[in-house]
Image (cartoon, rainbow, N blue to C red):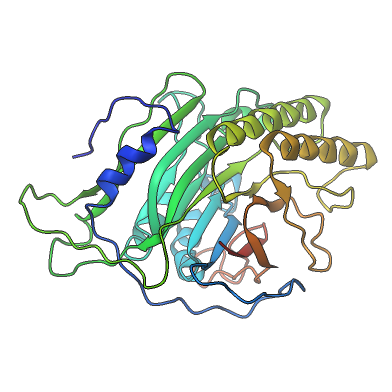
Length: 363
């Protein structure tokens, strides 16, 4: 059963998390195949010893309840895992429903999972729709819920979820022990006191209290290294109240990242930000709307201490689904084609109404 640890400061909890983590089983999985995608023109440099290239996929999956999307969410969710499993870290937005289908389907390759649930069982109606899945061990989880949400976003518990990942450890299922459905990473419960919650990775729930010896394997030539990754979905809309909410969210999220990752050497934020660094975007209603969104985006950059990841793919520079980073070397930003459904009522239609974005970085 999950271990209930006492509440601790997120900066000091790393040592406790590391203690539990280094007594459990991680090892190298075979490298995943890389699909052909549209890449930007960033030049790859020679990788140094100890560096690793990782791929981070961001996708707004449009898994709203049936009547609010296409009445085909269950069938679409079932097809999503096969299109994203090759990436190291997966950030999902709008997984309001059917998220368990994706999580369960990827348990053997991405067993480390973090979400941002509702703070109260009764309200808001929907949770954040945020999911983080990782091949690599999650040492800590941090959460924040936006204090300002307007109009339709008032019904969803939007915010941000951050994870600290150890890039020197990958999970490899042990088929000689318990079944995959029973052997799973677990996270201790998070605190509801205040806006921000912290959770640390506590190991595996094997359903077994025996003293069997665990194995640990370090990747040759690769020293332990961590990266902080944040996932968010911010305020939509172009009304005055929605602009105000997005600005407040930018301040809150920026401060949340700065406070929790000020010592981190590598940080990445990804999500449907509903804003970007330039005025040109198909998502903006008019010039005033564009200016307000760019202003809020600048606030997020300043408060978080992160820099915009420039997109050199033609027509995508103003995309609202994007990344910011610090302390990593960007290799490429790619836009794979959104797959079409092969079954269900939506057969032949795209699995989502949003772009897929893949960020490849060297850490």
